[in-house]
Length: 49
Image (cartoon, helix red, strand yellow):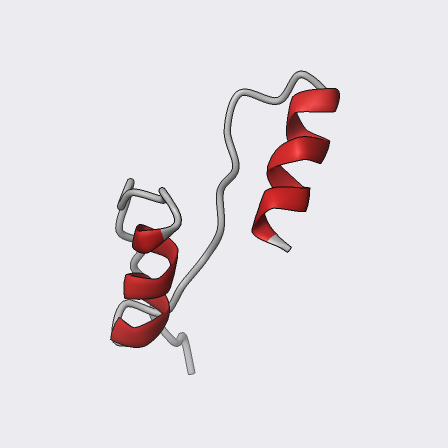
């Protein structure tokens, strides 16, 4: 599935793929890092209620 997304991005002249992963989801982070993804930013959120 990842390789298909990479191929589609190349066909559309996209410069990068970006995805969201929960910071506490170490298993997913490891999976994606093993497939070439690198940490880029950290997003912070806050409930307003």
